[in-house]
Length: 108
Image (cartoon, rainbow, N blue to C red; front, side, top):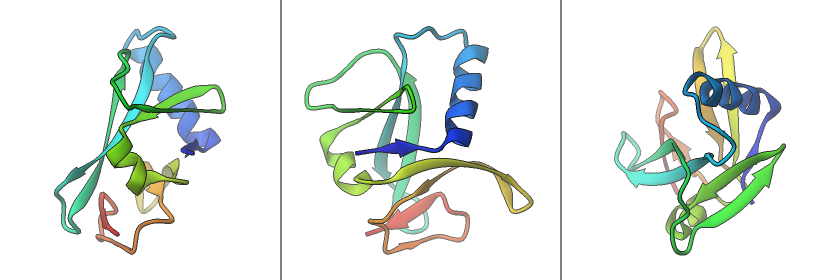
């Protein structure tokens, strides 16, 4: 399962509204190679399912990932921070063994 916090859901909804996207769009989350620690998170809006997509819904938002990425993201929560240490989305990932200082990449 993939999860999203209330605060992140609110910001995703705002971004979708600003982009003029309707309910046919969802949040696609994936893991790609790169970053200081070897793996990075990627997020996009999409409206086309791909073969072998893993589809989840939390707090009324559809979250989609490919099977390979799901192996890294299983039981992760997308959160949003607006604190003094930085503003933006970040993942709370129980599968991560370490992450870089900027929090944008991780390793398992």
